[in-house]
Length: 286
Length: 275
Image 1: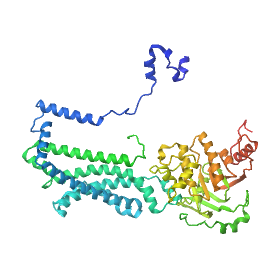
Image 2: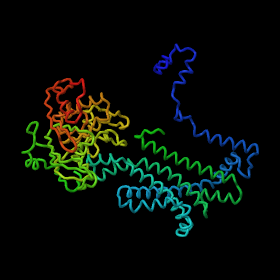
Image 3: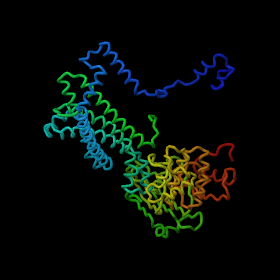
Image 4: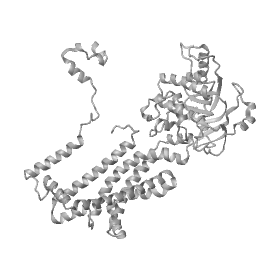
């Protein structure tokens, strides 16, 4: 009877005898969080996938006409680099993506600032952008092709549209969710309009902007894939499209891996920028 | 000061003129120092005021004068309008309607209940926010609140008490003629609060701003203030000068007498065993 009324800590002690370990374990509360992170967890899934692919190819479980073996992909990539095809196509793709990304970020940020800082701006800008957000870039393609032809401008504009929307949405959201208490503070310390924008608004919206940037970078590569398979004459998408007509799965896979590396790599770069720029923030993720 | 809603006269930086006309009927409680703050017949209502029994005004004609260098504490139950009064003096009442006269000095600083530091700015940048070429002064004030060497820290790296000290440094770096404090120690633990009381008294003794401290802590009001004002349903119900000699201690019978009067004015029945 008396043990029931004892505080919890008093139960565990050297005198409890054999049951100590078990008793102690029972006393710890159940862990509900995911626990400590596993080292190199990002690589585990990828490696498993690679092993399954290799074993499948070796045993003939995966038909090489359906999917080339990993080593074929590597040697094909080597060949493509040797005759310069990979570099030329990559350069063209990278230029398109970069240009679209740059213009898209500028447009998205500018729109978000105008719409976030003035009610009139919001009235004019927010509605159309929200509607554009609901229309996939792919659905706009027929119209863009009619307007801009099938050349480079159409491709860059499509990427720009895909990039501007997430940058706008997240930057605008970042602006609007800046705590009203900071606005009040800015008023009491007598900040000028310019000081308010540079000291409170921009740094406050930075987390939102960077999140938007992560989506934007992915969106840029996504749009790129689509536009490059339409009447391209160069680019990774064109290279893959050409390979499709000849049934060269190994080249298609090289293109896919390249897209993956580029997309993941640029996301990693943005994440790095994010961590540097937001070092003041202590979140659970970091 | 920021734009005020219609129906309210706000005169900033014209203290001397305005005061001449009103000094006669002021109930001065300390010396003959000129007034820093004059509030006359202040009425405040949130939302749209209606003539019929819709909205009850939060403030129903408040008159208050604070002399230069005087420390006034406002006590009141929740909803008594003490924060509304402070916000009226700070010029932070954009969406309220009302009437009355508010005269405040040119330089007004506000200390909020939360330290309200910009999390993305380092400590020194928070202190000098909105000022130019004030880094040296900022460092000096930080040293004064005992945070020398923490200039480059992020606000999130500081404890609650340290954050509130940064916010004190931020308000003092502007050399305010009026310091408005809205329950500045309400979120701190009891021990930190005692240390902050000592710090605030020292700082006020050195910089001599007029102070309006909003609090719900009777002991805090008696410990810090020259005069305690009780606000009850939108009106000032009691002006009580604190005339205690030397260091104020809750064990002092004078202290206890003041506390009893204030608690009575706040409608708290005396507890058995005390007094």
